[in-house]
Image (tube, rainbow over all chains, first blue to last red):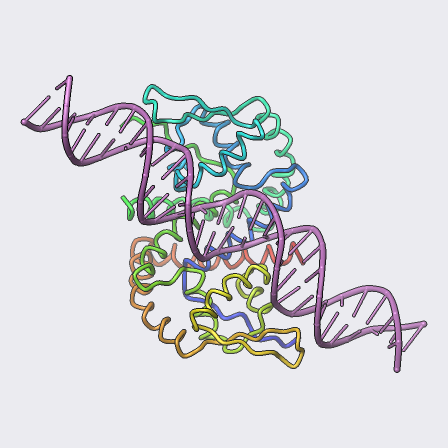
Length: 147
Length: 147
DNA sequence: CCACAATAGATGTATATACATGTAATTGGA
DNA sequence: TCCAATTACATGTATATACATCTATTGTGG
């Protein structure tokens, strides 16, 4: 068992990306029985909190390229989880939670809450809060640096 | 400019994933002129620190599915950045940095260092260190929870 | 009103990434 | 020694994600 230690990479990007992969697996594992991917779950949650939102704005909220959303949204529309309508500006596509999506979100909440509380317990209150704070700062930093 | 505020999602997973997307864009932007993706850069850096490493072990180091590595490694082999050889256990594929990869890594370092120091400055020393610490904990937690 | 720049998404393309499953090599008993 | 279980990758498939580019609209100066 004397294995080469994992070298500590001095790269913040790779550290955060690694943590992201790790967390993603945890959440995916929990959501799999419900038939939801993390990304999809997040979008359902955002829409449930924000109501009707144009695609570009949704991308801003998630710090995600709006054209990347096109693909994920297509899947979710196909499932009937979300609804779309044109805005006054007819280029815009306004998304909102459909009834089915609300139900799907509700079905997923117990599994999600279980993961959340377990992580919170294992990390401790301080680390838990710090993580929210720091990741939010990172997302804001990036938003500025791209303007 | 009175836009709906971005709803604060209580999901740690989505927060970390969002930060990861944000950071990824910053690093990708910096590495693009060099012709390296973040993932590739990270692998070059790991190999330069760890020497010859079997694929599965590399996956562990990066908390990345070893079969996901197959695709990225294929690209890097094609570029001649890394070398492979069979281990005593002939199922194993041992990877190491090739001369070309070392050169490529060297070419990328200035851009990477610039991003790193700018982030470090903007975040401050404490947040910078906390982020390394917390993301490492997350990766470890996940490793345990999957065993 | 009109030509042109700017904007919101859609689409093409490439990488990132995971899981299920397949294959070859290795290992652990019987 | 031989076979069953395990292990290390490879491959098929699906989603995630970004950027370049294209199209339809909208906004603007003349």
